[in-house]
Image (cartoon, helix red, strand yellow):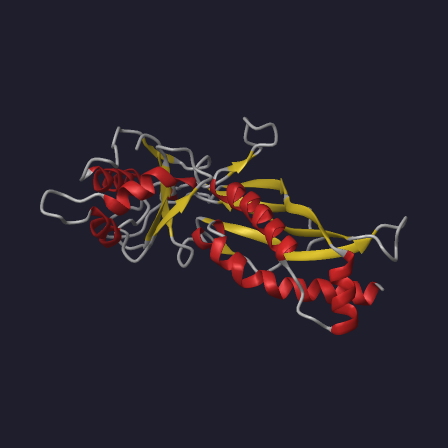
Length: 288
């Protein structure tokens, strides 16, 4: 039975991979490490602080030495999960006839687990619903463009992006050399997708050009009127990453009270933590 359940779980896992790739936003926004192992429950990591400016002279001299200060953090690694049930007769049909597995229950649960992971990466983890135990990209941003810039008005989106770049540039982030992503709450995303000037030109194209090769994302995890700008996953690893201890997987078991007729208990889960190493490389847009 144990081997059969493990095989069944692998069959379900195969059906989850592609759908989850389409819905996961957080993993598209940050570099994701290889799986480190589900048994890792906490991780030590360093947050780098800035050093002073370089010197210009006609020869070397003392006084240009800074110690690279790394603030060591230890963080518990959260698990993102959702339980579900599989009809026993579906499982028995798969066992006896090798029919295609109905993964609808697992897929529905996987979407819920994926939403939990996305919220953790994009906003953070607030176990009490208010205070963030772990910061996501928005809550952990080191810069905030808070000037009012209503995306329903043509030109305000480019104003907000330019303002975010200026703040990050002031903190030493090479904004002209990196590709960036812009992630927006659903309302602002739809406004940007539809806004045109009086000549019919769309502002979306201006934003795409300004992102230097990055993309525009929408996330329901963000509150209306907010968004953020951050380096793309391809170049963002020095600034932030998602330390993944387990990719999405399923497990299945049976109730000991009804081992032959009871439904299967299913669980889909992943585990990992967002590590923000240099928060000034992220700029939230808090008043759009």
